[in-house]
Length: 111
Length: 114
Image (tube, rainbow over all chains, first blue to last red; front, side):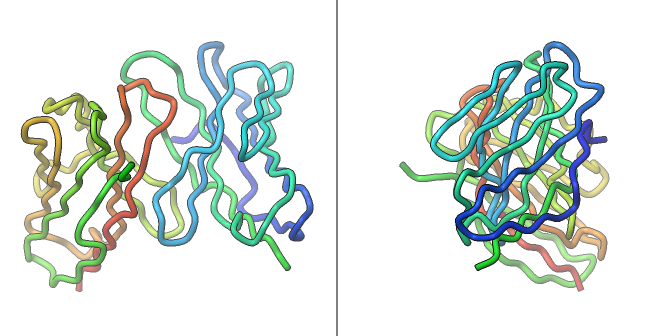
């Protein structure tokens, strides 16, 4: 079973920031938080990951709370092409650990 | 750089027929994954290869599913015989190493069993 909880769906206006929450209250100290997204009819695409600190790359920012029990993915200026299902996953760095995908959050960016 | 290639993109078969899916991972990626994705759900891992060895096939229904990765490059996933419940998207992914943070996914094969 997935170790994360996400809202099933969210809307965001084009050009505004999209903030996608994720709860992972049982996260262990060696588990990273990952975000992937899946655009319709495509395979999932890696977005970003983090352990403790906030992270930013060209696609998004990841904010992890100090107790690491929740995180937020931020798309600073959402476009229509960001409409997708977003998956939040926690996974340890140990050998043999696999990604376990939940149902994710369906983000709809509206014009 | 070419991404993960899968074929066919779509397949429609009748139940009890066999079907095979092919995957060519990104060059140099040692780890290859097959996932199954049912409608409205996230992908579920079926099998993971490291080079030519299947190191995790615990979720593969072995009575009807089989997979191989000859020479540690291309891989084939087979279902024989297919059942109605096998209708899903079958995704192939690869990563440089097993613990890599980023997996690269192909576009998937959408299987419909009638």
